[in-house]
Length: 213
Ligand code: NAP
Image (cartoon, rainbow, N blue to C red; front, top):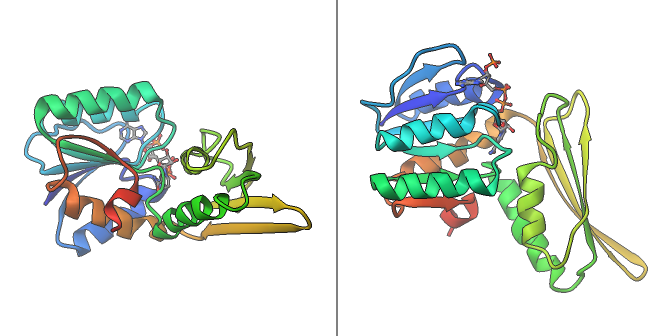
């Protein structure tokens, strides 16, 4: 596929670009100050910043280019706009708060644990450069658990992306933890999303979980 990679100079983008090429895709690498045109691309991938993602994705979808979105910090209103534009132009928009397959399994396991131990809290830990808090993964995990689940956000140098879901019961504690040690962790999920993009219904699909059968 001819892939427009928005945020190619960033930490995720830099890990992604060579792997996309290695998987046989042709990549147009776009940084913050580059001019770009979605025309002529089969798909776009956005790993930029919360203040840039909406404009980028809307521009791609309006040009009829199916888009994979990894940038976090999206509001419901952003997702509604993506859904309506994607439907209007007959293409898919795939958004995942976490492209690491282990993190998706963490969410599934947490939902299972909550059936038996409903008192849960989430601790998410990320590199200090991460702008949004709580993380998209923490919010997505909380949505799968009963009640209002408190989320604690830690931003420190040295961290990549980590999350613990703690379940408290009488005399016991269950911890489900996932650690991302490098941005390579997100690559297989993005490749899978690109592979499945043309088979998705027009409109918005959220979560890698929906691609992992
Ligand atoms: P990063 O290192 O800050 O990279 C973002 C890149 O986007 C920077 O190179 C930035 O350029 C560039 N950029 C900013 N505005 C742009 C625009 N309008 N058009 C094109 N490029 C633009 O951040 P990161 O760690 O790669 O993460 C990027 C995003 O992905 C964040 O929202 C992060 O939370 C999210 N993320 C998601 C997942 C997931 O699995 N869904 C995993 C990791 C990260 P400048 O540096 O010049 O501003």
